[in-house]
Length: 298
Image (cartoon, rainbow, N blue to C red):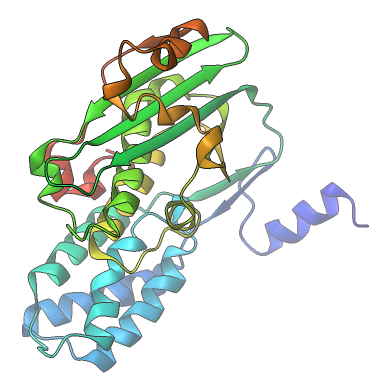
């Protein structure tokens, strides 16, 4: 097996080695400019054909694979929509929103994907997030998040009913809304607890496989999930933490308790206090951040 120094030497020759045990990946400048210029041309012409959209998506997918957190990848969902579903070839509001996000993320300098081989992280935090969605009219739609610090043997939790203005921005199909709400819970966890994650290794349990796939790949074919994915990757690039995501069974997810504010005052809710968890307000995205998800990391 090659020694660590030999491997780092090979990477340095490939132009990926930064310094002091860090490997830094960044998009090729020429390909990045070609991608942005291609989309800007579509904006100027006021049209984007399915063929050009397909080529643009392939280039976006390649370029964004080397961007930190794959931020911006989910924003490219309108290109897939145009390639396979749209009958109109005009420059749409969705395409314009996508291009604005990509311009904010990639220009003038996209966040690099950095792998630090030498860093020693502080003791880990354990996170959990969950959502409640009752299908009946007027049913509960709420979020729950938990942070447990093993070193301090305590932590925090937050509970929040989803406001109507956020629900109005989601696909209100009853069979799928739970996935969007669970993705929103993950995003709100990072907005709320991000300051506690600096310099820490984070283990985050999620009980929805669709959400977990979106987090790990930075991609989802549903427009509202794609926007939430972009919002999440944007905020994660501003947190100096080492995130590890894993699937947890729903019945073992402690965040199920705060995701049900109707449990408040029950013995089950009291379990949170018995574990040393203190309730704090949940931070929700503002309407401004929802409309400009790439601006979150700034």
